[in-house]
Length: 104
Image (cartoon, rainbow, N blue to C red; front, side):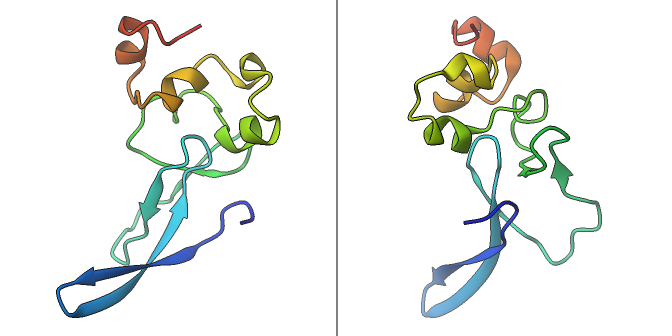
């Protein structure tokens, strides 16, 4: 998948099948559904250029490209920012990550 690629997920609601356009957050890899009625712009990281989700304060604070970490085989996590460990453990708020000791 290339950077900022839109793809479709098949969703079943009873007997009704729909294809919903989605993208993957460039920082935490969450799947984000694209809504037709959205009027504001998508958030983009100024460092890596990827679309990012709005649900995570951490994703919007620092570039934490999990995809790059996996390309490095998770060998140098510190080079990708101090919040990578927090995102990988599911933290979305900075205060939450700090209280859990996930920020290095």
